[in-house]
Image 1 (spheres, rainbow, N blue to C red):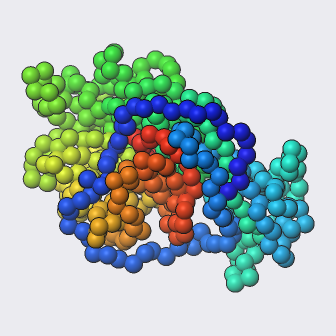
Image 2 (cartoon, helix red, strand yellow):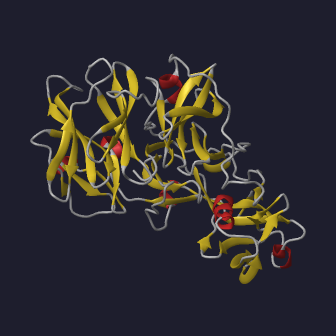
Length: 441
C-alpha cells in the first residue's frame, strides 16, 4: 500500500466501547450448521481485472487512525495494454470514465462495468501534477469478453484522528455504514475507503437513514427523531406508548419499539410493541407484539433494511438467545421466528445484507466463526468463509456488494474480499469502533 501525507500527532482517549454485538459470546453454544463448500467467485468479480498488493504502512503506535483510500496507486504495468503508454509506476488513478476511483475496489467496479476496446478518460496524479488522458481497455487473454486495464494497484492511504475528520456526508451507497469511533458518530463506505462525519447525536436508542439524512431518537422532546446534522424534530406516533428504540426503515415506514416504562421495574416494558409508523401521514400503519420462539417476550435491539429498501431484518433478544426476523413494509413476517421458514439458528449474530437477496450471519463451528450466507430466493444457507474465534474479534459485517466483509477487532477494522482474504485493506487502527447501523439502514 502507498502512504500519502503526514501522520497526525499522537491522539488517544480511553472510553468504554459501545458494541452492537459481541461475536465470541453470542455465537457459542449453538448447534452448528453442516459445513458447506465455499461459494464460487461471482461472475462480475474476476481477478486480475486489476490486482492489489498488501503492504501496510500505517504505524501501530497506539494512536487512533481512521484510514482512507484516496486512489489506486499503480505499482506496476502489465505488458500489451494501452495503459502502458499512459501510466507509469507511482501514478495514483483517481478517475476512470465517469467513475471516481478512491480504492482498488472502485477501480475494479469501474473497469468491470465497461467492455474491451472502449476508450475512457482517465485522470491520475503524477508527483504534484494531475494528468488527464484517454486509455483503451484491453481484455483477459483467457476470456476476451472481459475488460482489463492492465495495471497492478495498491490503495493510496491517508490517516486521520476521528476529531479531525472532515468531508461531505452522508455518502449513501449500498455499502454505507454508520459507526461509533471513540466518541464520534461517523460514516464509513468500506468499498470506497472513505470516512465522513455525520453530525452529533446519541445512537444508544437506534439510528436510521431517511431521505439521505441520519436521524437519532430525540429523548428530550417526547416521541420524536431528530437529524444529527441539525434541524427540527419529527414527531413519531406511538399511540401513547413510550418510544424505546428506533429500529429501521422499510419502504416509507419507520419501524420502532415502543412500550410503557415501569419505574419500579427497570429494563422491563409493559405492552411492548413493534410499530410501523408512516411519518408522512403521522399514523401507525401496523403493529405486533415481539415474541420469541416459545412465546416469551422479545426485546428488539436493532434493524437493517435491504439495499432495495423494501425489506428489513430485525434482531431481537428472547429467552437468552438472539433471533432474526425478516419483515416488509406492511409489517408482514416473511421469514424467521414466527414463520415456517427459519433464516438463522437461535443465537446467530446478524452480519448485514450481503447483497439484495442474501443475508449474512455468524455462528460458531468447530471452534471458529463461520460466515453463513442465506439466499432468500432458494431459502438455503452456504458458507462464505471462516474466521478465528478470538476474544479480540468484535463484529463481522457484510459490505453489501456480495463480495466483501468488514471485520472489527479490538485493534483494527479491515475490509476483506471473501475470494482472496489475505491481510485485507486497513480501515482503522487502534480505535474503539462499533457498527450501529448496517448498509443503507
